[in-house]
View 1: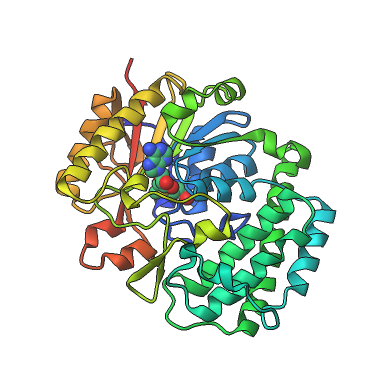
View 2: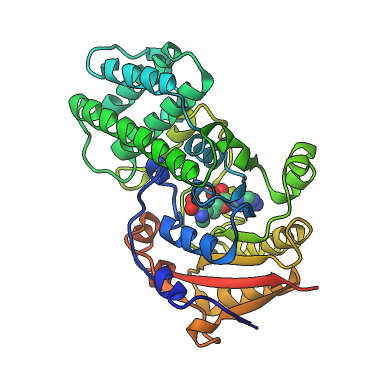
Length: 387
Ligand SMILES: C[S@@+](CC[C@H](N)C(=O)[O-])C[C@H]1O[C@@H](n2cnc3c(N)ncnc32)[C@H](O)[C@@H]1O
């Protein structure tokens, strides 16, 4: 089947614009969408007021773009970190919240506090260079100065962003004064990003205090979400499912930071005060072993089968996926979609037969797998539920 798209839609998908704007830079969630891509898909395939679903929402790029473009958004993910980030990115703050947060960030003195020894030994902070660990422990110990949970959540997200900048895939150790400068700069950028989101919504007639009503986020799988009365009660049938499931066979660390090359740390969960406890395969629909990959396609079929009962019968499913071995995994992926009872569509603009694909610019997971050139190639897939 052929999908009728506006001229240049496929071209815009291939653009390699950097991730920026709105609240997209709150955290560099691995393998995230380019916001421009998410926006183009939303504008092209949904109308204002429609519900857009992302069943593997990650850091919430779809959710932010849906809100900024006057849609309602449903986001599902099993990673508490993803849920936390997507929530903070879409929770506006009052002027007083902003003032309190800025005051707290400005007074935070990374150089002069002595970190609590017992916290320094927390296993969740393992592998972090001692100096950086001490600075983060001191910063977290001051969070009680903020009066409301939403202020503290924002502050934790800001510390998460700082920690990622200071630790993840970094070779040198930033000094306390560098951390302080960076932190203030980042907090201000984050607050500006939230203001931009509020303004974008306001331009479409959505007041600030209604923004959180425009999105529904769920921590768990689609099957769990469907069994949850609260979720079922608040949501409405999505007409567009825009998502990016974990990439089969591709090494992506959704739940860890990479320290000094080979070691890993679960520190993001400690910084965000979240429960951790799962291995890589939990977040990737299966591991990279032969059995892991088999499980991947079984779980993919299960997920999309469950999604059929949730989305509009005419909903469009747009997915961006990369493969470590496209020759075997792309057919297996398409087969899993057929088994879940979906038909594939190819864009008319692309000759009606080819699947659009693009090289991913400078992705972190790509650098992990330099030997694997295919993992840097994302393929855009369109499906509709079969009746
Ligand atoms: C490629 S990432 C999505 C990135 C997202 N498009 C963004 O812009 O940030 C895939 C996500 O799927 C989530 N995931 C893995 N298995 C899942 C499952 N069974 N149900 C829901 N989410 C799952 C992972 O935690 C990860 O956040």
